[in-house]
Image (cartoon, rainbow over all chains, first blue to last red; front, top):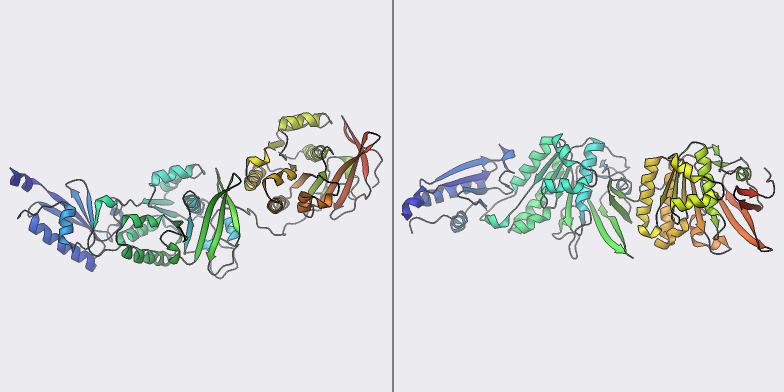
Length: 100
Length: 475
């Protein structure tokens, strides 16, 4: 059944920030909100602060801050910016709103 | 910190031969330098050599951040210049970071900055304690990022940050239609801008370099030719043209005792330049070969540049007049480099000369004849090239013998001769007249510096024993 199969789907997200800048804080707030709304129980968000671990930047080819990376499901998608445009983020992450 | 200039700020030697002379000591230390030019002009190789020489010659580690080529591809491409980037990375002297931006997998929403790029660069610099950085080519970002407003502001911030970091940086940029770079990077880099150019003139490809701007420093303003070969990049002039060499008092033989006696000191000064002129068939090559033989007998190395004859032909012809080039070649002390003038551009010829001189360390260099170089360059260019050549040889205290074919009797009016006669320390003119159907050969020392010489013409004949002078020459 469609609803159960979509429930099993997991979104692994990673948010790259560089310290607690307003843009990074806003991006984190936004992604948390979208995920709660659309992916409750189906997602994990890992936060990587490049100021603390700069060596992690080249693995995902990060050049902008903040950058949200969808690791799973593949293929990898990246959204750069403070994620203020909900529509763009949802399309970019390929998340279909469950409520519709 | 390496720096040799008189200017008020420190400079960093690039390690690119010739460029350090042209810039009066290299790039401004701790500042960004923009190198721009069209595709294939050698920007990346320039940048790579700056980094590699920094490590190998000046003990300054480096970082290369690329946007177009992977670290592996770049390493492969510069291997032909003798640079081993992988080895330098293993030794922790070089750090490479390839920034790949795949627009198809990126969305942009809201505010962002390029702080991650700064962090990556900073991390790379700190991890090897780099003093030199190359960013090749930052303009690629423009095809990967939508928001050019943010991008421009961030590029400006990046250059300011690099200055603050105190690293000497090369930023490469692709030449635009009417601007130095497509995205106008020259607006952000105001200290030093270098333009590279690649063009083909009369079927001969030439690379040229020009310093467009170098704030606060004197620099050469000409277009300078440069070459890329298996040892990297060299910009001409390879040596600075200054009359600062020391002169030798040592007298050496010309290789022809009768000729030695025509000089008041019984020979010529070591490290002097000899010009031999004459119309076709006056035995210029034979006389030049005596100088080779003389050096050979002193157990010295000789480099013979032959623009008209192959080594074999030369050896055969000289055997007829009693000069045994074959055994001299066999001994390894005589090296004949034969090549057609039109085979390469002037600069390439000059470079092959320099390299052979470095390699063989000859005491005598013979160029036979310089007049054929005229066929590939203008008088001015040839003169320029010969000045550089003679200067280099003088600096190294190498004897030089140049022959030049003249077409008219009045040698003073001949172009090539006119171009070099003032550079030569001693000038010998060969001629002949037909007397009763017989060639009456004559040798005249037109001038010589720093000693006296016989003033009248000396008659001579050539047999299988070589030159024989008719009259006994007085001292």
